[in-house]
Length: 145
Image (cartoon, rainbow, N blue to C red; front, top):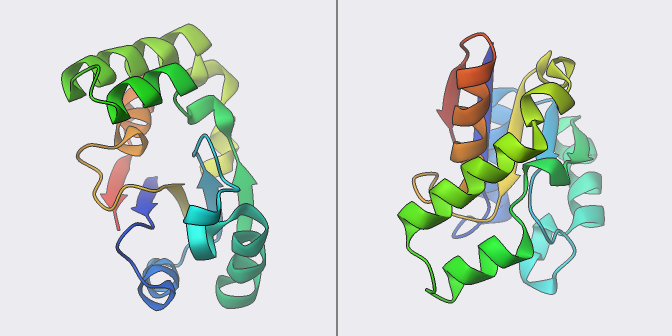
């Protein structure tokens, strides 16, 4: 099994949807805390659902279980905590939520991508969520688009 990740920041709609089509993505799981912000541009929830269907023949799902809490996210954004502390808090949250039991593995039975806003996965919760699941489930490949 291979699971993809993508962030929309610093990407045009053409680059974003082109990467999804090239990877053959058929399901996008939105793991953002806020998916209706005007700042989300072409990835605002309802617009994204439409574009995915029309441009990629892909399904849209919002999964807040894989999102950070407002407290964790805001503490990091406001530089009250370091990236290392954010990682620890987020992974503790995933453990507390027992996402490995609550997320249905069949969500990944076709080419699937996790979405958040960060341009790169190295400082993003999408990478942390998948690495957490990778340690709890049977191994799978992670590809960052």
